[in-house]
Image: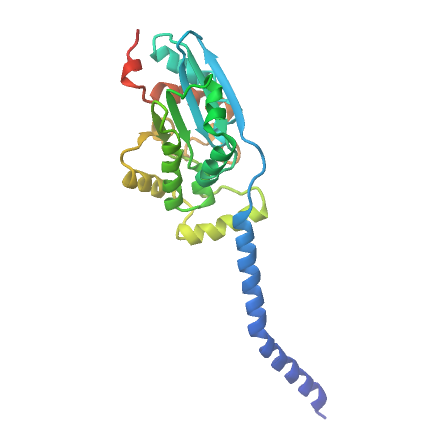
Length: 274
């Protein structure tokens, strides 16, 4: 005999599920959007690091300020950077300071710079004087976090304008890193990265050149220091980087400091060797 009661029970369950399905879909959509918005608003709480290096001190030291991401942290560009500048200036004293904002994209870097380093505090690193040279090292976190080329361009320009009273400002083209196989530090960062990757960058992993071209196209007036003259691609140079493929080893950070000091532009009135 057929068990009509069981059959009716299964039918009722199916009908109930069919009724609930639109509500379940809506609930999952709301959860997805809420989770995504929460991830997008998460911010790092660690403080920026500040380090300075003085070479051949004299009565008229040349002042260099480096502002950027984690590559700028812990003074690992020093003393090679100021030594290279001093040599180019015929032994003139050089004081160089670096402020590193670990893990910050350009928007967050700009916001924290303004909040935590108003001009009086910033220039207190140089006895209250504006720097002769500012080098901005940003963009790596923009590309691996996939914030979008327009955001990178907008806030790079704002970073340059923040130092309008400095002698000269130069931006380093986004360094070559392992974009494709980069692994975010945790699940939340991975989810956030994938959401933004498809939202801003067409779900592409490798966007370095896209961001670079956008900056050159929109602001051809900016002074750009070409990173490719130091390392032209990640593949084939993996030994220069730490295991994450995003940070240079300490040895290569010191070499990078020498490269920057040797390659950055100097104002015409100080460039000639004495």
